[in-house]
Image 1 (cartoon, rainbow, N blue to C red):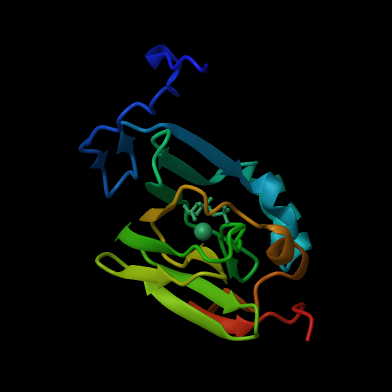
Image 2 (cartoon, rainbow, N blue to C red):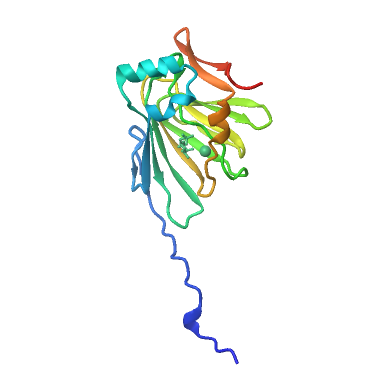
Length: 202
Ligand code: M6P
Ligand code: ZN
């Protein structure tokens, strides 16, 4: 006969507790944060169209931080958020950018809510459509599932935005790293413009 003992019940997950998280819209600091990382320019070389301009920029200005990501990712939660802080600058005609990615889980979207600075969010679908959303304070950009997305700082100050997504969305960098984005954000006659990426495979 089976003996049922109450101390053999599976342990319950600890209950998640509510918390107020302070986000500084100018610096992008998140308090408390659960993690952070920085991306230096040198790790982004292959993303820019003009590698000669890239090498000249690094030789002249050194390997500066291009952007930083600060996270609030509570263990056991289904959602997470954080900030991205992008420095201003250009490589040749192309403004500083993030790597860009699809989500590993193709049914997961994301929201970017710009706090300060100005930029543009470049997006493309797997079926050939391109879109962009202006990033300026007060604008929340809706990123639907299975759209590649890359942020570009087109201003002269830091671009700071809050991102929010499901914790299991994941990053799929492969296709954007290989093919690039369909559009580039470049300076043209003193202002930001979007142009077709001449290297994007047709
Ligand atoms: C946003 C979020 C992060 C992402 C970051 C940088 O903050 O989408 O998940 O990591 O941008 O973008 P990437 O990872 O493409 O360099
Ligand atoms: Zn994303």
